[in-house]
Length: 447
Image (cartoon, rainbow, N blue to C red; front, side, top):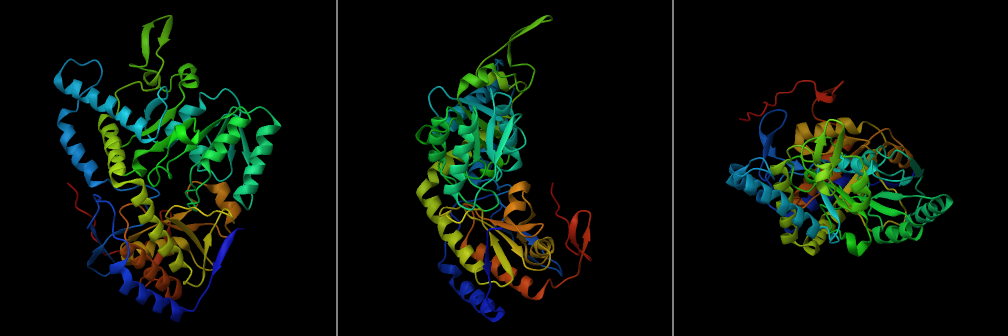
């Protein structure tokens, strides 16, 4: 287990929580305007509080700019590519302009393909069908980058990134490899891997590099050409465009000869009863009617992230991440999970485990009593979690461009109280997880 044991006295916890409350006004405010800003949610016992969303690593709320863009373009929604009507031509332009936007945002090479998919999992499954040989992955991968590969060789991570890279080098040199596929940043610890170094390592051994950028891209600018990345997969729903679209960006040759991801209209040049002539390029893998609105939303989100700027986003998140981890260091009875002793770069993610008690119960109480959303579990990274944690499940808090110092401080204060004193209400464990025994919160009225 690699973990940091964090202990202090309950008195100090409460004192520090008070100090943070006093300092919140001077801490980082939200950097981006999100659709859930100002959302109020009911809590047990009556009343409402401002919702604190610290589950953005799972799915981020939409940017206001994205919602407004969707409202503007949806009247023009129509079928694409072969329609003669004005709306059809407008929708076609939205899709093809979005392809250019995605390519520009991720630093794609001129001959790279941009293929729209449902999400990162879909994109990596598509890539897996195209790999002409073995794929090497790390055990720290999200299941989306662990399960799809048909010929998979897994390297178990070491206690440091440096030692892990040495282990990858040994594996890549042991037998021919077509692809090294790694996460850009762990969705459990937030630790960022040295992508350019891994690309050079893969290329040195005649392999290509694929990056699962589901976590990394919403927080950092990714440049395929500059870093030497061959394939990049990511999701709109983690990049503030939760409208059901992701993308696979990368080299065309493997994809042009791979089986069509979906067999259907739009992916073919000609169909005869005895034979099919498949297209090459992005069309080969985008059969059927595309998610025009989702694609437009994704492009608008990436434009907005560009407008916010990589530097300001990194500075904003770094300040909040430091505040989060410093606060966790003042709470007794928890451990912050780490993957590597030498990781000096991480996103705004912290996963903790309790010395005693249930993280599921704490997560339920944070939501029901404090209006704070986090996530409990193993985060679709079971092999990695089982290796670095000492308990069955963890509790993850994750930040984004819409997070603020007040969000962090409310979480730390509520967590400290729950760990020290337990929930104020009674809960029971059900097949759906921990739930209040008596839940008097009204259901939302939507629509």
